Image (cartoon, rainbow, N blue to C red; front, side, top):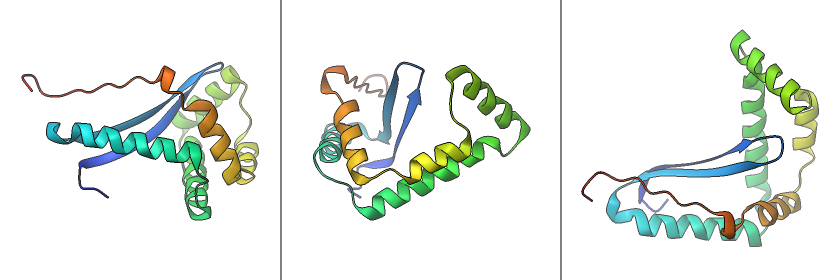
Length: 130
């Protein structure tokens, strides 16, 4: 949107008792400071404002599509069922029902709970010599 980077991605890693949220991007060295500032602004916005109904619907649809791809072949199905057993996860239909019931307020409350500046780690990787 701001023409500062080649792409921005976000995702999570979950464990039984903890996890992390990763926000990654690729940009030129001269744009790093501005990009970091914009990402921080977006995180603050998610913590302080309700997302739109459209954003919530897009997120639910994307999550559903990614979740059902977990069983699209035998290898991914084995991985998914191993994770289910190890982490005590629900089956895909239960997860889909839980996601469908999420509200904009749930997203706001989660962002306020899980985005913690005290635990933030910022890593910048750039070419040698820059």
